[in-house]
Every structure is written in structure tokens, then in C-alpha cells.
Length: 160
Length: 178
Image 1 (cartoon, one colour):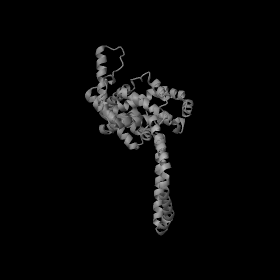
Image 2 (cartoon, chains in turn green, red):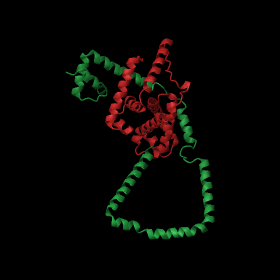
Image 3 (cartoon, helix red, strand yellow):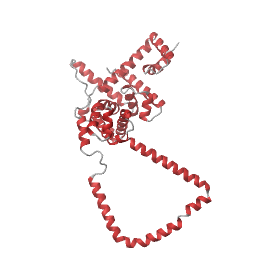
Image 4 (cartoon, chains in turn brown, purple):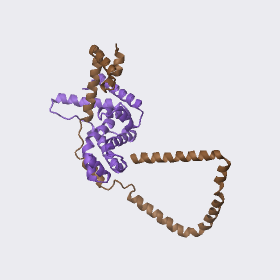
């Protein structure tokens, strides 16, 4: 025979129809004989009915739909960069182009040295990886983790 | 409805407008269940639909539209509750008033007091608890669907729902809300 404590712990599952038939029958049998549990069951039903009425009582402002459509039509949606930001970006690009014209003769020798240095240093990773095979594993694992993270983040950003 | 969803995915604003008309009541109820004021709920519902329009291209199937929309509504509401808005004052005209249905003035006053008390009781629940409660009681989603929408384990869903319902029952019993 079910006791009150057990019955009380099952009342929400009983309400959700989330009990197997045998347990459900035992709950119903207990409810038919126990006044305290009947009161608790009634309170649960009344509380949830009150909650339902409270949450669904309001109706949306009749202009809500119109406001949303106006917002969409306003062309604000879809534009992620504001006009002042676009102008600022354009100005910066222009300054960069002008700067490059004047600075290029000065920067050219530096770039040349850097390129030579890069050419000498390029085989270095291959030499290191060959000398330490464990690093091949580590770098490959890191690459896979980075790819999976980027794929997950992109998918999540697309969903929301 | 699937036709409107397909057209909306192709950028048809009118079709999206039909979706807004069709789903606005349900989305508003879900949002209101979490944030607790009609005034804020309408703003968040509006944000929800705009976010949905912006990202509807990423929706995989038409059948998933509503659960996807609810997920946006829930996330927007929870973000709102976590932001500074919570600490702001609620304007006087945002305080809920029950619909007058021709009852005697005393009964209406009692109903109004009941609504205010229920709002206070619901405010004692965390937004996460309110989210599971509204998805279960209003949207009638299964525990599995709620877990999928909120991205939390099934056990957490069950414990949150039962905690929220029991807390509400005891509070209603103690404070006599009718």
C-alpha cells in the first residue's frame, strides 16, 4: 500500500501522465482513500490552472505586428554596419593608401630583409618536427581541436 | 503555414508578417512567463521576431520553425533578465491589471489583488525556473523537448519543473491567491 509521502512525490508525474500503469493505479487508489493527498492534489490543479490563466490572460498590443513589420521595412534589419562607421572605415582606408604611397620607398628595404629572413627560417618547423615526432601529434591534435571549435562556434552563431 | 515559412526564408517580408500574426500570442505568453511584465514582454517579443527574420536563412526545416522561434524567445528573455534591465524601475502603466469582465467592483478588486500577489510569487522564481515552467505548462512541451530547447540535461528539467511547481503551490496556499 502506498503511503502519503510516496504519493505526494508522484503527484506531478501523475499529472504529466508520466507514470507507468501500475504506479498510476496505486496513486489513484491512494488518492481515493486519503483526504490529505486529495487536498494536495486539488491544490496542485488549482495552482496550475491559476498560473495558466494568469500567463495567457493578456492579448498583445494590436500594434505589435505593425511595429515589427515597420522595423523590418525600415531597412535597419540586415544592415550590420551603421553609416558613420562605414564613412570612418572609408576614411581610414584612404589614409592608409596615401600613407603607403609615401612610406613604401622607406619600407621596401625592411620588407626585403624580412622576406629573406622568412625564407631562411621556413624549413625550421620541418626540422623541429622531424627531430621531435611527438610534436607532430600535438600540433595535429591542436589543429583538429581548433577546427572543431570554429565549426561549432559558426554553427551556433548561425542558429541564433 | 509551411508555405509562409518557405517564402519568409526567401526574404518575403509579407510572408514573415503572416508568421508574426500567427505566433505572436504564443511567443508573448512564453516571454511574459519569464520576464513578468507585459510592457517588457512586448519589447522582447518584438526583438525575438526581428532576430528570427535576420537568421531565418539558417533554419534547416520548416517543421522546426516554432521550436526554433521559442528558443530565440527564451534566450532573448533570459539575456534580458540577466542584463541591467532587471534593476530598473517598472513604469506605473506597466503594472498588470486583470481584464474587467463585468463583475462587481469588490470581485474585480480582489481579482486585481490576486494578480499582483501571483506576480510577486512568480518573481521569487529564477528566470530559468520560470522558463521550464512556461514551456511545460503553457507550451505543453515534453521534458525531452524542453531539454533540447534549453540545452540542459533531462534530469535538470524535471527537477526545475517540480521545484517551480511546488514552490508556486506552497506560496499560493500560504498567501491565499485566488
